[in-house]
Length: 164
View 1 (cartoon, rainbow, N blue to C red):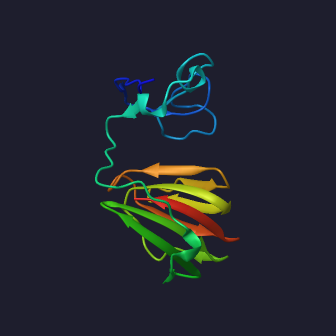
View 2 (view 1 turned 90 degrees about the vertical axis):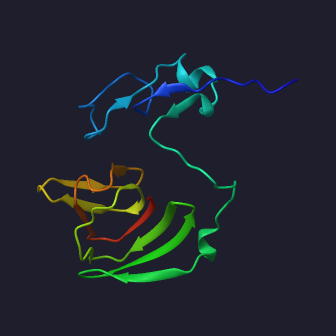
């Protein structure tokens, strides 16, 4: 039987969860979110290739796997504490597994865009405008380049996966 090809649908919002909602959904801060009801989207057996966002384009990267334990960790000193980065570059995309020691505080305001997922511990992120956010395992933040300067710290240590 041949492989079925489906034209991608235009989706200009993040896909998340299983009910419909937009800004103001509890647990979602500053993200335009579309949730899918059972019987629609992923629950109906559609392939992930059918749900594409216009704004992200990943090119010139072959399928590969990463054994993060074999990637050398490089220490980056913060204002206090240390962050150990294991970094893999795939074309224009940088992937990082980062371990921050307890008491780590970044030594600068960051203006780089990231998608950051907290895997372990707790990460406190303060925006330049004074807002603060606390990430615990399973939580993420997303920010565009030059959008909102941010600075992170961790009282207890944290392990993070970052794409930028």
